[in-house]
Length: 271
Ligand code: OMP
Image (cartoon, rainbow, N blue to C red; front, side, top):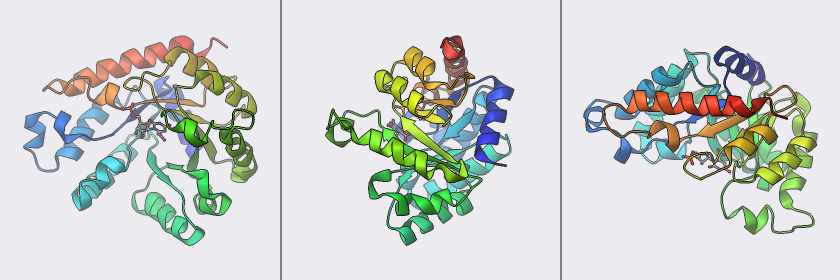
């Protein structure tokens, strides 16, 4: 199934635009889980069981698995396999992008080995660095547009007259021949988000930066959704999965996800 269709189904079924980020931090996982075999997978499975009726996507960031070497990668594969049994799409946050043949290898790993439904990519190296991902027509490709971090001012918005992120957006519109592109726009940049949504009325926007990074939820939802109140994927990682670092972590994550889904929905149709 195409990523966009899978996303639309999950949005509809769970009445949700919430994406839970699975950014594993062993120092925040309860001792009883750490004592088990494959604690990363067990932790994720509990979080997924507690939130699968509340979300439209999951977004594991590869860095948090790669840092544990082969064990982390094996837990990531098991986690994605488990998510696939729930019909919720997986956006693998990898921020890849390299010369063509290297990107082709990255794309193969992400879509064929890890079996993600979508990926995040870095556009700095231009079209041939993104093309191998776009060739997987069924998969979603989220291009970094305007990121949530402070350093976004170094390049993305350095030129106030002609900001680089706008050049990226124009290219993404060109690159969207297979209708499988999306854009990443940080929740910390609500003003620009409004403008970006006008430039790309139909593209799915992945919007991270809610919760731990202090992004503006209300504005991100209002400005981020399309005309039908869809296609904004509002991500929170630490704010959900580490709502508690005690035994009650899964129910605490469930409560945090319920609250956030509700807060998102209150702003979805306010355009
Ligand atoms: P929390 O701050 O814990 O909610 O995590 C945010 C997640 O979104 C992390 O995995 C980041 O790497 C990712 N992210 C950003 O925070 N800012 C961006 O501009 C882009 C991303 C991303 O591509 O997902």
